[in-house]
Length: 221
Image (cartoon, rainbow, N blue to C red; front, top):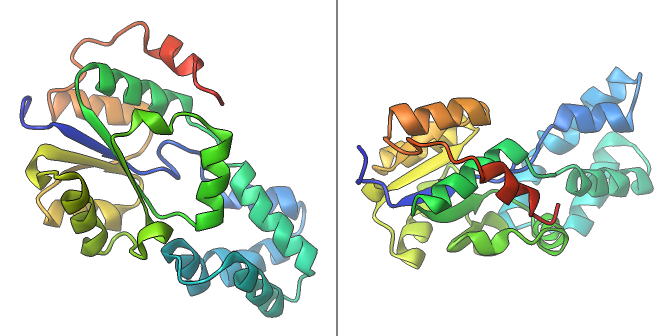
């Protein structure tokens, strides 16, 4: 397949940035599994969370709803949202892959389900956004993965051919949606496995460059 892929499309949370909701809940509610389960169900797994990602619900209104459903104090719900932002930190081995793919001539893009306030925070905190030729953030476009429309938006906005594009995401429904649209795709299960698939299945990264890690160390993280 080498030579057919021109574009690599990355997800953010769980691929380039840490996203570990169970750890967040354990941090906020240590030794309180009941409250962890409640907040997970009524906040992180509730349809309102998807509405935040899609940009159809403001964070202020969402926090008010979270408080009503959980019965937890409003400042606590605000702290939860702050913690979500603060714990989205770069996964260095994946950034090493990103650097290597860039050096190999791949065009890098990003499609992420992400809330407006969360992305605004990350945009200010990190300086790696210029590495992408294009970004599609769900809340900005009012579209969300795995719906096909967000991928069609990516294709039309940046002039990408699906068959020349490879998508990397940690959520199976998103990967399956991309494949239905004739994209090649990798289900992300760690940077080492992703590198192996890029090499063995897609003919990329045949020579591991020793300066990948040094390039990643230069990121403002």
